[in-house]
Length: 236
Image (cartoon, rainbow, N blue to C red; front, top):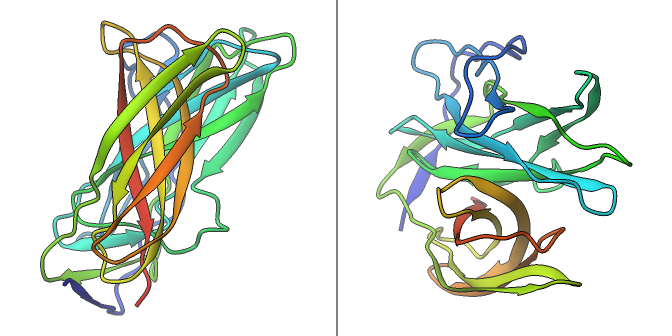
């Protein structure tokens, strides 16, 4: 099973300035400045972001990101999501994953996702900015050995006009330690556009084993498919 070795590495440059760099497939879904890294330091890149329609005063925003390094793992890869209303006023800003789970680790090349719920009152989200916060020294380390995988299988989604959409499945733990695994699910329409997102946990998944999870969405969105992204807690 995989092993890691920590090294003292040059610190990555801190937070990059917020700024728009392009739109995703839906209007209002944007990625922000991805931050700057010293040569050799790993980089986390936001590849997609989106948000849902409001439901009972709340809306969900999400981002899909990737650890672009093929040599380094990143602990607590942080994605900051800022939501704006139609007047371009900030509704709120949130950084995920929550720092409560300090050992969530993106292994080399891993794609993962985050999701945040915003209180929009009687309004709605008009656009978002999502950016990766550049990893700092101590937040990344060289990975040695095979890169583990975290597979999501046996998934199913159910929709109810009152209770909304729920999804469930199994997620594998590729680490050599028992781990809590976070799963983010993104519902997509027939064109592949995201319409809602939610996250859940599978707790204490045995090393090399699998555990069940459930996620519950804020609304009964019309959707055609669902994508699932896993991120697990690594412990030495």
